[in-house]
Length: 486
Image (tube, rainbow, N blue to C red; front, side, top):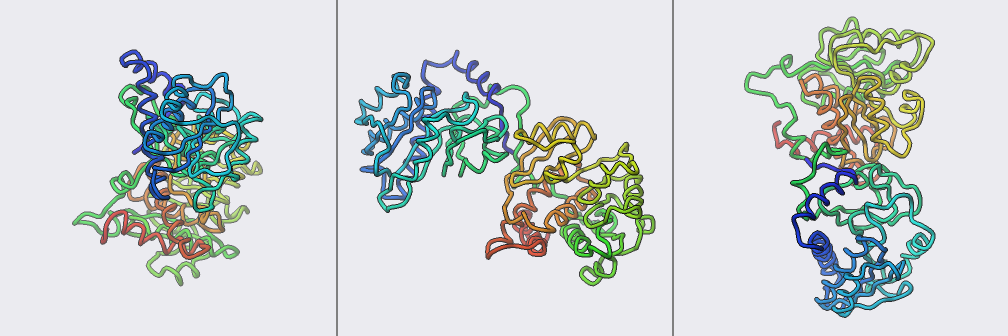
């Protein structure tokens, strides 16, 4: 599991460590890691020797990192040029090191470059790039590499111009192909629109990890985490002790929602799926192993409920939602169930002891919270989770999972392929299956989002993917994650 830390926490750790190290040690470590990654990129395009490297140099320590990295590349034979954005405030020691290694200073973008290093601003900056830097970044398509293409851009620590603690884009910002981040992940690298600007993220250890204190801003699961959490049947397993999930979704008007949510539930770890709703005939045709009934009250005993997708928003749908919420088991609410929560004509009581998970997209979140998620999606999700006392899975390219106890997760496997009708139904079903199998609400939401994201990527390999494609991709993705036969 990886963790992303706020700027204040990183700064505090830096100050604690700086008192124990010779001056400049942390910058030298960061620059060495940055130069190493740049060298690997240049090796793919013909090697470091003779390669043309452009450094975009701001006035802070981020510029110093870039300059010392450039000096290291120049000593290996690269032709390194630095473009200072504020020549009078350029990092003096870094500039001297670059010149000593044979680097040169330029005043404008050169016509040719094989690699560009973004050292304009680092984690201490706020707001988007100012006018001179923004104008320069807008022209980064002008230099050409040896093969005639745009040179790759490597950001030092974070892409310049992103809002580091939130992942927002308050203005102009660099779009990097690779970000070499120092010490730890930062929120902007894993959540919000800024994460898409980071490209591939490489983490360089500069010795701060042991002195980071407090709680991280975000946790980021990896495959090993999800595989370790995933419920597996034991030697005494049978369909009931593996968990039974109830799915109250779909209707005669929207039978597809039922078919998709049940498909997601069947791919999960539970041994039995019970369906309750008006699309029972269509569900049974697609999934004959399901036990179906028309109403939640007739469905039988379950260990968790999924409710909402395609349910409708009329009074019969509201009655089914109330019956689901009255059950003393974990519940996932999605789509129409979320609309029913904020329809003031007949109140739905959310006070319950069993866990509750809400899975809104941005428009549904706005109706639930009374305002849009805004630039700080993590803080917004945490506020809603605390207010409703539920786990909130805020869907998006970088889905955020927030718990009412204040923990937040960023899903690293999102895909634009999942921005299509019905994929959320599949996610809700899979999440409910994990809850019924005994996983906690937080881990079930994180694991479901992770696997669902992988399935979206898998389904889109050969072209645009539908929700049915994502459902079919769940099993091979889980086989790769967990091993065959799990």
